[in-house]
Image (cartoon, rainbow over all chains, first blue to last red; front, top):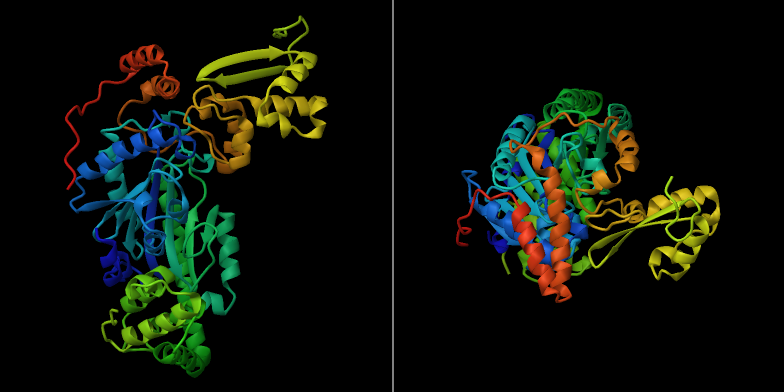
Amino acid sequence: MDIESLTHTSGEWLRATGPESDIVMSSRIRLARNLAQFPFPNRADDTARSEIEEILHNQINRLATGRRLSYIPISTLEPIDRQLLVERQLISREHSENRGRRGVGISEEENVSLMVNEEDHLRMQVLHSGFALDECWAEIDRIDDAIEAEVTYAFSERLGYLTACPTNCGTGIRVSVLLHLPALVITKEIQKVFQALQKIGLAVRGLYGEGSQAMGDFYQISNQVTLGKSEVQLIKTIQDVVPNILSYERRVRNALVKENRRGLHDQVSRAYGILRNAQTISSEETMHLLSSVRMGINLGLIDDLEIPTVNELFIHTQPAHLQKIRHEKLESAERNVARASYIRQRLAGRPPEQN
Amino acid sequence: MKKCGRCSKPAVLHITELRHGEVQALHLCESCAKQYLSQAPTEAIEEMPPGAESEAGDDLDELDQRACPSCGITFKEFRAQGRLGCPHDYIAFEDELLPLLENIHGETEHCGKIPKRAPDSSQQQFRLIKLRSELRTAVEEERYEDAARLRDEIRHVEPKPADEEPPPAES
């Protein structure tokens, strides 16, 4: 995979083709695995890290996923390219900022990402558009089986798959859905959702996972417990709760329209207007306005723009993407100008200018 | 109760040291331990909290100093970073980790996926981790006779890989 080409494409999961994709941006499952015969990455010296990378790189190469997987050695990438992969949700921040031999195998559609020498030796992730956890599980389970047939994972009969952090041991699974909940945010009902989710042991995070802020009214909901329940049980917990949140968000959206259709129409149109005309715009404002526009499209208040374009703008207007598109290093103020210009071109339906 | 290795008083401090890949177990009474620790030039000692002389301090300290025989991480290091050093830590620190796991997950028994490869080899794997780390140290220190012995031992313990063919050429 050519990193340069990433700025012209977007992941399959952004195309809003999956079920409930008006609210469920994406579904994701990740598994944490370690090779039995090595220390965990943070305790492994350079030689061990290289050996681990070699073993897992070979496994990734021989995986028959039906799609091509490219292996990118993260340690050789420029910081900007690593940042691009983070913005793209293909690697974690930790993986980008870590040191030493490490890499990632990525499928062409960007649905599959296999990180080597992250916090654990292997962090596998499958991502799909919409509410599609069963598909994610089927695919990641198959990849896991294929690798497991060739290597010996660290596993204990009592504690399951052994991981560097005890919070992941057992199944090593993190099941998550990324939800767009603007109406619940506007009405401040979102707090109730958080509390309810906490009670059943689910975590709520921002767009970029652990420790990240909720940008653009996106919330990631995921399991916290990984031991003592089966993968299917953990998936089902999320599958059972998400429809309730979706109907809550839809109910509140409809109530907002009913109460004050003109006011809401005005708000989303203004957001759209600013995005189409601004000459300089921050990332934060962009997220905020895109969120309004996204809801406006879903409510039929904006009819000349498609959801996948908006989804893509959330990702392509981030700092590393803008700088890759412009082929130059940009300071914050320059990025705000470049961002505004890029958004104007995309919303005018023109292909963005390349420098 | 074990007796102190230097006098005949009961041992209160049990130290596992990893030196050049060799595991050394020391059992010391309070006064010998103090003497030993004041000589041992390890970072851990400098960080010893002032209250460490008290009985509770001793217990905590004893636990903190215990190291995993495979990767050498101490429980103190784990507590500081929140990351374990190797899979064997789950056995080496089992007594301390089980309550922690219960706290995090509410359970301590895995009931999910099980590798299709039988996990009966886990003991052997933990032994391999240790041997490999010893081998690296031996090579670094140019102790080639030891290295050769270790390499043979690893070969002996290692499961026969199913895939002997060379890795596919990179494209």
